[in-house]
Length: 124
Image (cartoon, rainbow, N blue to C red; front, top):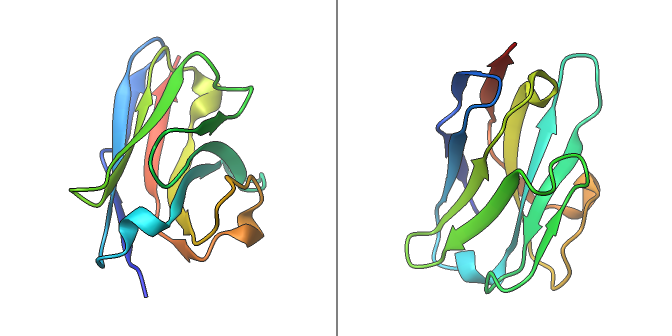
């Protein structure tokens, strides 16, 4: 069993930056692929970024490529999402998720554990 707790969301102006973190419980964090998803009101949850178990491989959604960076610290059981040049359309609840797989998946049903989410609001 793994528990995920996100933090770091908030309100930021367009063009600003924000970093959200996800702390995982358990001693097997390094065996999980980690992903960030987001869900805006009235929309489906969508993939934002994913990271391999060692952190050596990433998959970034086209909508945020060049602006968002995903990283992890396996010693701290934490995964991060650095968000730069934020846009109002980035406003959503951001969720981290863990998948006990080898590949970085973009589908929500491939992830085993989810955090409760953290709100990110970008004002224009």
